[in-house]
Image (cartoon, chains in turn purple, green):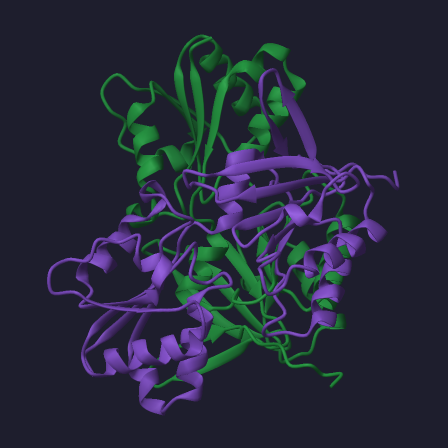
Length: 254
Length: 254
């Protein structure tokens, strides 16, 4: 087996956030495998085979990529953002674990990228400048009560919280439940940011508070950020405010 | 004020992880400001002024950068990893908030990068493939009891946990306390990874368990990863194992 498989993160969208390493892997690939929307961002070279698919079964996509690599292909599995964060890398290793032992001899590499929360945070200032967590709100693959428990404990820990996949057409209600839950734990003044399509031409950023936010504003392309209790909004005349979380946490026991 | 300030993330080390946007900002800068170790990675262009400093007071460094920008310079504040994650971006906005109101009119941009935990995760497989959190173990700027509380709640939430700054010469004991605390909450079989100097020539990865780990192995250049209860180790003949956290969480109530 002399094939290879690279799991490549394209970042949230623009070319300027794709690492040189990711570029090289895309150049060197004989086969590109991925969700149609991500592959559409690329201009395949002559001779490169493109295997696109719907945004459905990631495990099936991973298996297809692995079987191409076993046949000797140099496969790039294309993912948005960073492939290790709620994206294709975990699906590839699941497929390896569930597949024949020979797959463990394959040359598989994951190439890191800029994940959505880092791009959104950079756009805003530094909302993730202190301790934070990332939660995938989709309950397609995990029970809702696990998500609720993690959200509640994260709120109690006073993490800044990045919520991936807050809403979709099939799951319009869960973001409302997430807000209800956070409103029970966190102060109404907690900073909330809806970051839509960051880095894309239709990018949109909406800075509000937990008390005032309309959860229905979140859609499939939104990353939701909840500040810690210390997160600050710096107003600027005529421009969108900056949002940051100071490195310092005061000792309230002292 | 026609100066600009960009807070630029160099990633964990190698050139292949620096985004094109970060490269451009470094090229366009008249002034480079940063911690000596990060600036040493760059080859300044003729005419570029370099303002290096010790790894001490980030707020002072941020103020210096802002004052250069106010004088009309195009400043790149250089940071390791992603500047928004336990790095220079928060210090810059702190300096703005504490400084004169004119600073809010400055053109300040944060350029996202590959943060250490994403690089370490990619090197290992996909340990951050499900919900996770990032905690800075340094108590230089926050009380230790806040760190302990966050660690305990994160362990109870069954997050994968990335620990930044687990140890230094001045803080050799805290990583032992963190392990003691996690051992009280999490199973001894929990996967633990010491990821040292990822992407550098002396990179080192050590995969072990919470029960067996020697916390003293962590140093200043280590990122510590604790798996969730679902995190898996895939052994490979003759090679370092892969570590990944499946996307799926079983319903233990069902």
